[in-house]
Image (cartoon, rainbow, N blue to C red; front, side, top):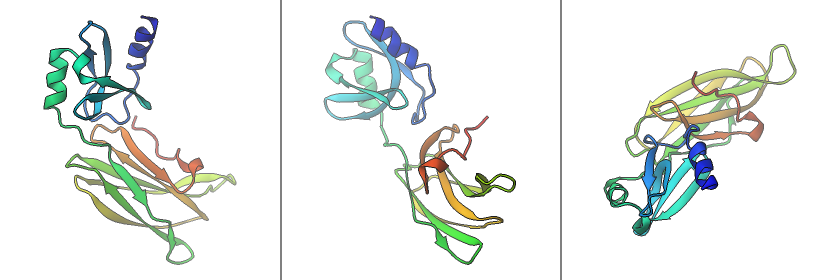
Length: 182
């Protein structure tokens, strides 16, 4: 019972891959948990309890109402992003191609932050920023003229609700320059 309470407490956290609101799930024994349906097949339903924490449940063990919900719900995989290696166009201008897939007619914002050497400190800083909204799979071309030394980039996909659903950066250390919405 303590573990069930812990799981329910975890569910209060933000859902970064959620495409719908969390819901309460009940099994045939009356046990409950809260989460989002993120995948399903003929026998199992995968529920995201919190970002990075998923459980697979046998559909036959769910309440009749939850079985109907699983049966009636269309589940799309989370959007994906692939970014080409940055190309140097001249000494201060760079470009990347960003390919987004698994969009499935959802409204997704592609955000790019170019990382350059900081003006005052000798450390990375966010430079030029740009974004574009899409509802289809496609490739976007981004270019930026750098004011200072180019270091890399961060690309983030954001849901219509503003939640980050995918990200890729030229280096792991740069996965921090796109701030969550306030």
